[in-house]
Image (cartoon, rainbow, N blue to C red; front, side):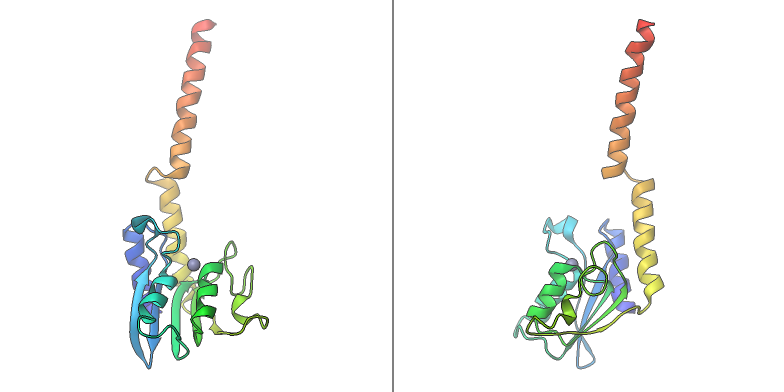
Length: 169
Ligand SMILES: [Zn+2]
């Protein structure tokens, strides 16, 4: 999970939502990656799907592999884990807005699907959550992104609106 956190830090420095993942087989790191949705322009480029693809290069069945990820996987990534027949998932913090393992859905333990994945949660939970909190705080406060841009537009509108009214009165 420390390695996954290192990957999350890399994502942070690249302006990506800081989530990192590591795929381990027989005690060896097979693949490590971080979220690169912005850079790749690919909505599926979550850390988990990247390591699953890399780890399944020769064999799509990952029945002997463990995936470590800093944040609870989303619906897409949990689905990919079932499709990969992943043995085990270890994650850090929960994602109450998108988690598909414990929070919103329980895809990895759903008996209606043909494969279930062992789950361990809450590993280095605080560190995994803290980096996300810091990222979103920085994004809201500092650089101009969605929220900031909106504020600027609103500011612009209100000055334009107030000037004519001032000159009219
Ligand atoms: Zn995902």
